[in-house]
Image (tube, rainbow, N blue to C red; front, side, top):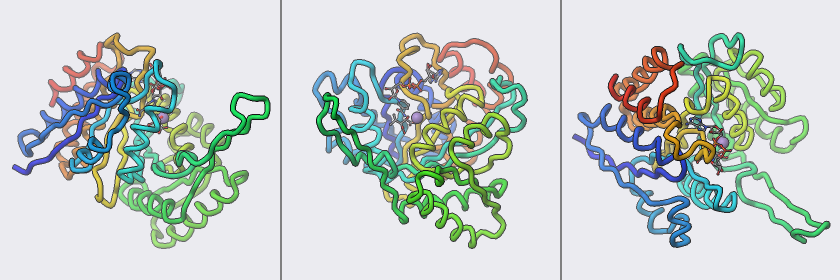
Length: 342
Ligand code: NAD
Ligand code: IPM
Ligand code: MN
């Protein structure tokens, strides 16, 4: 059996409650075909409050040596917003050059969508993961005075955009062959124009793939009025963040939405996590939905080439939702129910 090392970072809040279920699903689905060695990292709010460490270099180096990362969520109301989000989560995405942030949305049978007529919803957001407004470029002057000026610079490179554009078109070839670029090129003319030119050029190499364009504001409309129109949505870092939370809500809640932060060149480990956060409003109550975390484990397995085992997790989740999706269950109950089907 081939050996793999999986870094596990449960993180904060409900991250700690759902991640054990992702790990158990991974182990049950694929433990007999491969040897997984799990290395748990004590990173997140508790660690920071204890010794001030956010992501020490030695931890990052250890994580770089693993084959993949399973992450829960980070963020804690006791800590100033941004410290853990930037210092831990974004530092990982950037240091490991996880440029494709892959976020599938599917309306499962048995889940109640808030839409009256949702139709078939099955699309994937390919969100750029290492650029745009997330770069951390900017600053503030005259802080806390009436003259304060705060700046956030959006950095977009042709290199960074082209690699996700290519990923999106390759993905579309395996799906319904449609790519929708979402941006705000009517206002953000520099970055928007660059994205559109790259899409148009790359599209020439994919004659079978249809492509269109939507402004981000209109895209939020279509996501609720006609979500069936989307196959692959290609967008930048911030638009992708916002759109995928909306997508999560449309398919019944972010508790069903998994993601992969992928280094598609395989130079560094990729990271798999629910799209949701640490949910302080429900943390500690044992009621977070672990489905997104479990589906993240399936994405991890698919990334490592275990397609059959990944499909087994997807099927167990699908069956669970179809039969029990409308019942109120605890985190552990949902976890057990899904594991029982594996
Ligand atoms: P959130 O995703 O944590 O919660 C938004 C809403 O969705 C809340 O009402 C929450 O109860 C609900 N929810 C989320 N996950 C759920 C689940 N599995 N089952 C049932 N309900 C669920 O977003 P937020 O409240 O804006 O952020 C809370 C903290 O998490 C912040 O510190 C934020 O920075 C952080 N955050 C981290 C990540 C991440 O680690 N990837 C993602 C988003 C937010
Ligand atoms: C997500 C989160 C993160 C993001 C934050 C916590 C940095 O919202 O994974 O969707 O904005 O990417
Ligand atoms: Mn988000």
